[in-house]
Image 1 (cartoon, rainbow, N blue to C red):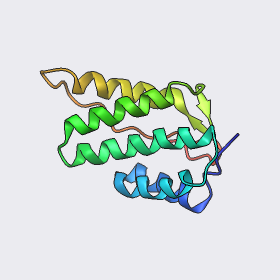
Image 2 (cartoon, rainbow, N blue to C red):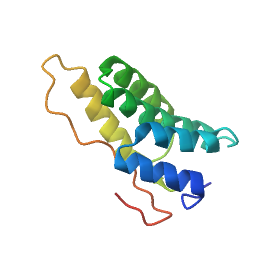
Image 3 (cartoon, rainbow, N blue to C red):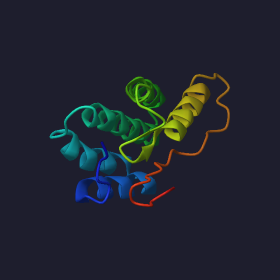
Length: 125
């Protein structure tokens, strides 16, 4: 099944996510998550946790960032490389990079913020 990323709340959440407005992305996606059915519901929950984790990062809460990224990864790991129009494999790889850096005492340079690659709308970032 595919989520319709041109639908208002998903589209706006994606726009917010890509612009670094992670709290707002979380809010838009949560409205869709509340009415979603499985397996999309758990998938959206993983995406929401990714957005929330980077909101924590922006606020300097590194422990909260890592905790939510671990939770998101547990949810997203059960999905194939692409699901619901989203390239899941590169997102998981970026999450793992962030977890490695956040778990390193020397705090290596931070990887880039994740971008969601959406196949269904042509919005590849």
